[in-house]
Length: 126
Image (cartoon, rainbow, N blue to C red; front, side):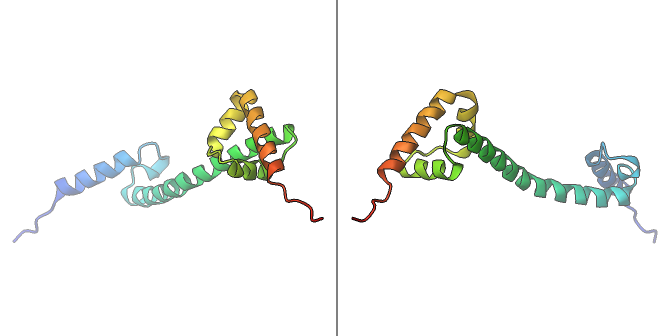
């Protein structure tokens, strides 16, 4: 009995993989074995870096907020603490956008935070 060979199935699988590795250089896009390992590694990096991108953006927002606060005579940590005390629920992304595009509104936020911190300052014992 002649062994059945699944040429169509194999060709379909290889075609699908080659479509996914489009844009890879040299043999990495058309040599099946190399393309398979390269695609695995690429997907691993893509998964890892989707998480890393979120961290990078948060760091950028914090740097921007810190710079805006320093220009107004306040530290970033004091500012965030004051926002929490005054029950202002703005995330760092929106704070960063306000600091860049609407400095007057950011000034008002800083004034609110300064007032809140002054009201909640610990009293010296008599």
